[in-house]
Image (cartoon, rainbow, N blue to C red):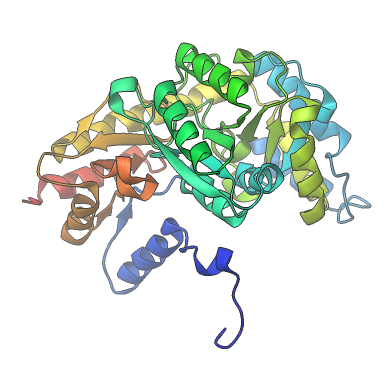
Length: 395
């Protein structure tokens, strides 16, 4: 109980993360005897590279394995990351331009703390990953949503951004940073380099720091993954976040990176070193090994996701939803039928046939007419959900 004790406004005014509460609800339904198929959460079910477990097992008994580790990561991890980003993304990174993180979600919080003073604004995509807004609030900042719509393939409109920037400046609010995410979650939109180059130019002119969250770059995205850093020349105002959670199926292992110029990542590094003391060394060595995974392995993983994508599309279309083709990442984003919103349809399907699909409004008001389906379940499970839905009339 906290009755009688002061709770900071940053915590008191923050709702629980949606999926934390929703998973508790789904567990309660399962405990009551209902058979629930969860197609809402993006926790990869495919195994991590075999080398990960072998490396952890082999290193766990090494002398010093449980001691504090270097703040910039052990040399093996740093070198593996440099090689990975050069080989797979064509990036030539300085060793001081890489900051290891316990997942890219940690980087969202540290960057907000590093770049914003209380009362500053951050441009947040709508729809978008909810952590962008919550990290902004926890830093004392003001989340300022900008719309992502189908007409622009879910990319920002620079005129809209500038109108928002000028309106906030007139109110005395300084916009310090902007969140981007391509391949986009939740919409599945592939990155459009021409549109994003225009956004980068605008942000540079307005001195708005850009954070590009990039955990889905290698999921259903073709042979050459996208990096925003390839569109900007050594900018001190751009940082990109990467994670092994999705690409290497290591979500629970919590390993990621912030990358950019040494100048760009320096504020984050100053904050991160106040909270952490380096990751467990066997995990760092395992991550280094995973970064050297053969390209064919990623092709096999993507073939599995592509097959699931087809089955998931059929499921959503059986509900009368519209699914845009060629989506990237671990999800499918679908517009719900006329007369419905995503929240109502999600509840109807959950309580009517025991299948959970995430309502789009979780990701912002622009997602109200959408549902999101996760590809982190087998084809058989998705087909089972489709069979239930085929025998269910939400109308």
